[in-house]
Amino acid sequence: MGYIERVYDSVVQKNGEQKEFLQAVKEVLDSLRPVIEKNPVYEQHAILERLVEPDRQIIFRVPWTDDSGKVQVNRAMRVQFNNAVGPYKGGMRLHPSVNLGIIKFLGFEQIFKNSLTGLPIGGAKGGSDFDPHGKSDAEVMRFCQSLMNEMYKYVGPDVDVPAGDIGVGAREIGYFYGQYKKLTDNYHGVFTGKGLTYGGSLTRTEATGFGLIYFVREMIGEKGRNFDGATVVISGSGNVATFACQKAQELGAKVVAMSDSNGYVYDKEGIKLDVVKEIKIGRRGRIKEYVDQVPSAEYHEGCSGIWTIPCDIALPCATQNEIDEESAKILVKNGVFAVGEGANMPTTIEGTKVFQENGVLFAPGKASNAGGVSVSALEMSQNSLRLSWTFEEVDERLHNIMVNIYKNCRDAAEKYGYKDNFVVGANIAGFEKVATAMIAQGLY
Image 1 (cartoon, one colour):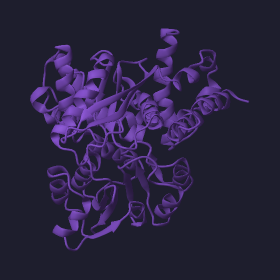
Image 2 (tube, rainbow, N blue to C red):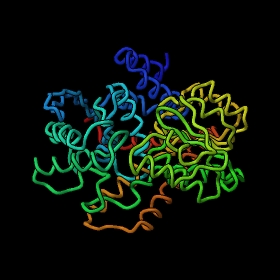
Image 3 (tube, rainbow, N blue to C red):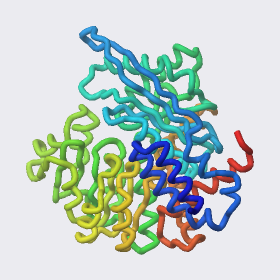
């Protein structure tokens, strides 16, 4: 049995019930095979064994009172995976689906994503099974304050810098940061995604969506294609999907569909982004309300049907494993030529294989959605310098980072004989930087 197989079998034995984590580990380890086989030094230093085991996993309860005065209890966690190249960095997710396996998969992916940015940040992730939807501002505040009463012990600007994720926007970050500040009496950038009046960065809201388009534009541009005149389908309608839609439209694309967790809208005339922003950002409504303001549009219950809409470019920006093998086959049949992941691991391993076998350009999330964490790291820099850069300055830095990520993925894939396989390229490029730092620092 080879080195990779031994490591993966060990991960399965220890984490057999954590399906998302196992999926992420298998995808990475399989793609690292060419670099592992050519460089026995990685096995000598047990790099893979150390990468798949988090530095620490912190799990704790969060008691809080609802508006009726009843005590509620949720579970929260922070998984600090690897800090070989910088302090831990990764979002906090608030959603009923959160469990240790999901947080570990996200934290593991974050190691490579953060490495790819070229910035000095390590990988971590956290969250809770608390659901902010339907809660009052006061209830969300009390929950966030209670969570921070425990988590503040484990974070800091040079230790672990959390950010937002699903269920954690500017409101939640504000409550987290306010309580952290109260407990520590320190005013420093330990959270990113902060409001612009207290240390936040311009372009942070747009960063992941813009970055996705910048990466995909480079990828398709080398094949003589572009967004101008392309038909695009985007899943999701949060920040990532919204600003991916905005940037794609600015480049001349026609975005015809968007979704939320209940269903999707199809607008053959092209999505009216101002309507989506008013519904989803302005008042946190549901995407089905779009058809009330745009009568020509169609609403369909359920999410998977969005991938039956013919398109040139598909941008999954909702959640993990939303494109399975069947959906991938339908997209291929309908003529898709590029897929860019805006969410974390939104395509199953089987779905990814379908795209690659049929010559579809495929941008993996750990590379193509790295724009958010890139601007988070730029926010950290601004906080350290006590400066605030303009929107244009941050956007230019973001664009340059995404172009470099693309080039590093492309070059790593070609170096090991996997031209145009950006999954292999992203994993190898991210891995080599982290592994080199781990070897240099010895056992710790």
